Image 1 (cartoon, protein in one colour):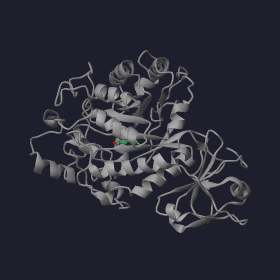
Image 2 (spheres, protein in one colour; image 1 turned 120 degrees about the vertical axis):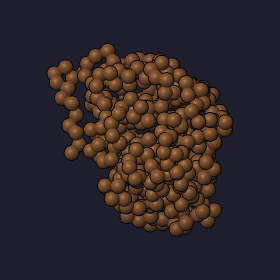
Image 3 (cartoon, protein in one colour; image 1 turned 180 degrees about the horizontal axis):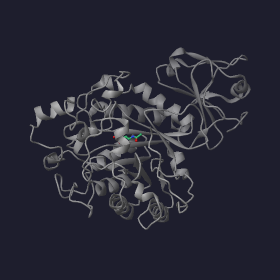
Image 4 (cartoon, helix red, strand yellow; image 1 turned 180 degrees about the vertical axis):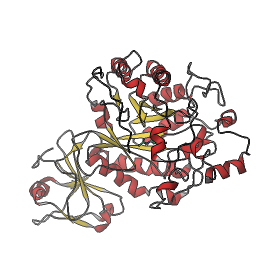
Length: 450
Ligand SMILES: CC(=O)NC[C@H]1N[C@@H](C)[C@@H](O)[C@@H](O)[C@@H]1O
């Protein structure tokens, strides 16, 4: 029962054409940061990987800690019970704003870490569904400048990101803002579509907020979430069309995602999912390191993706023409959870050794083989062809027929020549068998260059 979008009628705006910029396609790896009031309670009912939650409990047991403001309002939810126990019945979620202190916040350290771990862009939340603004906005007093930290966190993050050589994007919750809505809590997928404002005043509010951020920081990525208020989807000075036109004018190398609810997008997004194969469109896989974007203190190492699986997730995504936007959920005080940092560093170490097979590459005509050892393919800007073995511990693999000839002539594991026999059997050097993925590079032009 997905709500049919508004009938935009004959005056439906014509949206600007805008290519996904090559910096974005070359970047391959970005860091998402969900940080806000929800990081104070930092709690959602932990969901074990693969656990099935019946659809009627989806929202009652929401695994996203950043949804606390909604979950806490569902009578009897585990979040409501925890909140009453820890904060008392009389404390609202919004009251927490005044208790937010960020004594451990060090934006330069964050950005140096992300850059050192191989990220090329960073996308922090400017405003999530709770409506709390992390920048010096003139549109509301519900912000990190007027409450709690009394600091313009987006400005500090923007400066630190660019100082660290990172592209700087912004996440914005276009459709949901629970501070300026007074609906009942969302308890189903249907509620998610019906319990939201679509009026002109809200469309203008969202437009004004996002334009403040565009005018002030010229973000390289506009990462809108869920949808946009319907009243902003028709013609008018504060319409989405006007927003895109102003954005592209001010940020010619900028890029938007695909969650605006109108027939305009930059790259497509997949959340905790992947594409099936190489796609003609540019896309981005996003997920938390665990089952939540906002920090969830109820999660432990068992809930987080394995170090090796994280490397293979990036490789698989890139081979399918995607980027990975990996989320970090800082604690309220601005410190970064050690188990998250550890995975980021492990990915960074792999990228330091094998980044040539990732950055600035493009997919080949196929991303993998239907049978045989799991491999992924990428093609470098210089024509170098990379076969990435996804299970080096097997010790060997058999090349597809169309690769054997060029492999026998030029293949190497880094600077170690590869041992390839006439049947395409190639040995994986023992020293590489402990890696999460090993890279065989063919330097010579090969069949089917993508
Ligand atoms: C598919 C979709 O609309 N997801 C919304 C979801 N996006 C994540 C990146 C987080 O920000 C969630 O809190 C948000 O609800």
